[in-house]
Length: 485
RNA sequence: GGCGCGGUACCCAAGUGGCUAAGGGAGAGGUCUGCAAAACCUCGAUUCGUCGGUUCGAAUCCGACCCGCGCCUCCA
Image 1: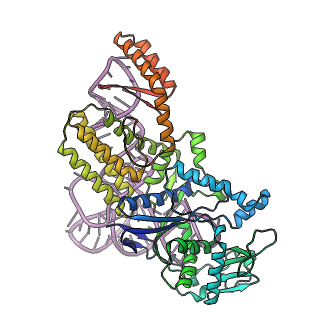
Image 2: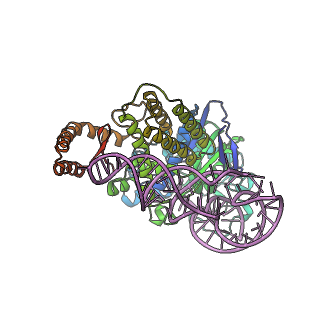
Image 3: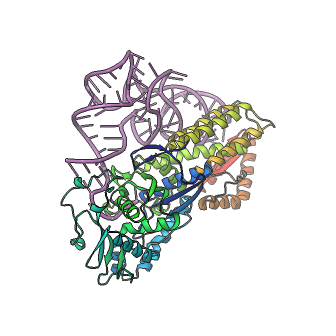
């Protein structure tokens, strides 16, 4: 039984998709006016966890993520730089996908762009106009909130309780009511515009999600995600537009993730406290998988306070798992299977699934993994692990790694997890090309050690260390690995 | 002012009525080692923001309060 916290209603609910084995998922994508920061990626990471978990549980997932490539900020940026809107946004779109790939976030099935769906948006505005939910003022169109009685259901904001006198866009002064929002903005001088059946202009922000979700997922679909800051007004307005137009329920489950904060404050471009993935990797030498685990390991409804200390901790946790897998691969074991291990694997798997089933409680799932590692390590120390056990354990880790996707399997272990990581592939290549050279050095060192020439042995070890290769003397011989920062 | 989220060990973080309050990181001790490193093991909160209340029993439910943060304006 899978349960999620549904913002609509504000409680935990059992998840039932519209179709038994398919989940229709819409996640709010980036506005491509600047480089995405790790706070933005936290949302995409939470959505990745959700999606991978659903896939893991046997659902098909149809995933749509919009790309907002026209809005006030993109227009402003393009004008400032004297380039076309498309030219301006393209580099950020590119960077966005680079970030997804770096962090191992699965691709959506569709990435519709606002600029490619403008005519459909105009058609929706026209439809709302005909049904009396919209009105026109000087070429702009607004949604008439007074007409939509369900307004405020998602965010629990009663219309009357909206703070009076808050800032109103200077170009929207002609609205009937402050709370009404723009569906369509009339053409302005120097700004890009589209010729449509409702006149020249450009879409408002909320309309794109209503149009593009319906286009790929239908009038009603299962899950809609985003950051908590989207609850109001963005998602509230989407509901109003979509339901007013279709007369049907828009979305069954609304899932929102909390913010990533830094030094106690929300990370955002306007506050100037952002950190990008590129910055972490290039300036701090961070392993992208440590970033992934950090973003993943705090429950999505809890604020995540980003610190470099937390990043180090995530990296250490990750290494614990990686070391475990590497150890399993390097042991020389007797044939056979220990029933105790079979039970441990079963328990881990069960608890792992149970955790995620409970509103994506990743902490509980990770605990299951670490508990198993701990118990197996004891068995390894007692030499109670047999060959089949090691294989089963590796399979089990590979299996849950379909969701976590953070584990690096050493070159001698071949797992088909169907996913390649850029960084992993790089490291593996490095390992292969260095392998011969290092083996030679290790032999030299072993010789020196046998002759009790420890000075030479230590020098060889230090030299390799300087090159980022760590040697470890174990019972089964010398093991080496490349240290990733 | 309205609507929300959170406050559990040095740090991160589960647990939401009852066995010893998970797990990870850091630290201390130990095993291993020529020495290291790495790895592994052991240890760690009589206590869950504060104060009351309900209960045989509360970190968990109720009330009040304190603190931090977010949204109400573009924002993941």
